[in-house]
Length: 406
Image (spheres, rainbow, N blue to C red):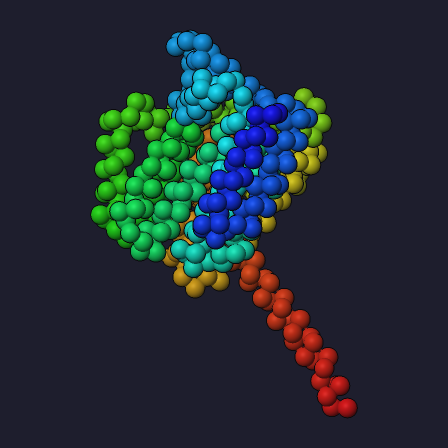
């Protein structure tokens, strides 16, 4: 606990200085303080290894530290494991330091999504505050997991695409884009090819730049030749994604059950229910359609009795954000700019629908498209807010007419 608290204090200074420089001090400060409280609370109640994956990463790092070079480190996740090993080897076995780093990275979300909104001419202040107060990050973002780092790398990719769309200097933002894609590849390898494809599509069709598209593809190609395992991670999608999803689903369901005191039986109740229509391509199509429906809109009403309240609360937050994002897109003047957000979010959702089979996995991974869509959701919220204000003004105006006539 001592290492966690000291690291959080140091992180507070870093977050304060950077957010003051970037003019997002208050949202960042609120986010950092609240996530720090959540981190300390979970650490005190559940310990530093609150979920199975945290224990898994911790044991991997300890065994690497002891010289066990034969220990298997999962491709596409190794960056987090090696970062743990680095901290353990230099400072000592103190998981709290990495938890504090996760809090710092979560506190960077308001700044990143706010700058993305500014580049796309969407509501900046509302997006910034929304990024500071996403409810799910107060659990998943303060554990000994790679989620905060995944979100950070993902949102940097989206910010770089938005800046390039806005005409910012490519000499700065193209390296940021490529670097963030590389980070993402070593953190969430099973979706790396999906995000890379989304970035190239945005550059080609939305930014409309062959040079940037070829430059990004070329840079990734060179990196694939240089960095160990990079190419193999990129092609992981579709090969062992189901195995990875099964592991994440167990971790997520166990974590939710532990946090909500629901019990171990909660894990098996979150599997998607798809009708069996025989063998072959028809059954495959039905299964994948059900997966896409549940990943995009689930848990569905008829699932309430078996998945529990935490899953429905997560689903409700997601559906509200998705609905607001759709409204924001409909009423947006520059609809092309929305595709900078919609294309990556849609491809990630499609990949989830194709590979996932359990709500435990969905609620953890669906945070990625949710965070991407925050600027659009803020635009949609403003549409409703302005409509309500106009209606209230009209009611007040009509109520004052009789008084004037008298």
